[in-house]
Length: 305
Image 1 (cartoon, rainbow, N blue to C red):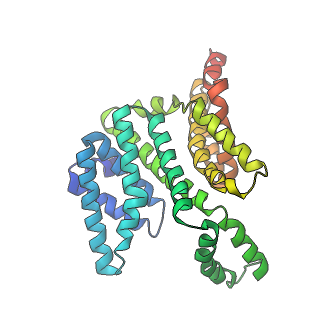
Image 2: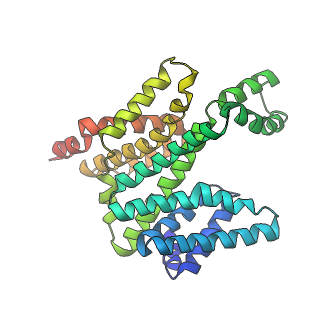
Image 3: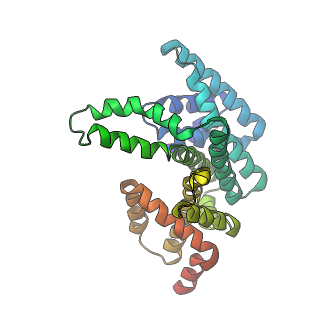
């Protein structure tokens, strides 16, 4: 199905913009559809270049604005998509296109996620308080639903804890959208124009020791009681963990291939990611970090020979 969508999108900018607009609007109901929209932006930009990529985003913005104005009076939705999804994916795609390095493009996506954290702390006096005020009405409604087991004090305590992490979690979510969209676009590009090319590229992904050392440093800062003045650094951790979780997935894919293991192992990993996402993301990120020094992929290749 994705191949059919990709072929249709590559017929021209208007076709691509229509598909991106359709899946972006569908993401308002089912958020994962936004990954497909981002993937088409990445595919079109990688194949056609920056000018055409920007043209598609412009057409998409017009389409989504018209639809939202006609049916909901919420023109700001297109601006939210433009700033949080379409433009960041475009930038990551341009980095990949110019550098021919998947690692560089993923690190650029992580850098944009960190910029979101820094920008939030620069322009919002108290991000935790801001998130708390934003979330409280929602959780007040949820807590009144049948089956909700926490009392008002416990619910409020949960909101307070969540509010201290929300900037980092939102930044990680934006980063994940960028990198998943980028990977979908790159995979579709390979499938249409270079069959089999993406698998090898992904399995050889290496983010490098400097990024790994940065991640280790943020993990240490998060674990140690170093004071609230370093809160913004703690909130950068989910972003870099998301990037290194992909590095860990790359290592797992390579090992399965090198060892000629059953595809069941990959199915099991992805199933666990769905069921226990936070724990699996951390485990994969640790594997990705350690890979920079221990080279598990090379070791698995030697073991297989």
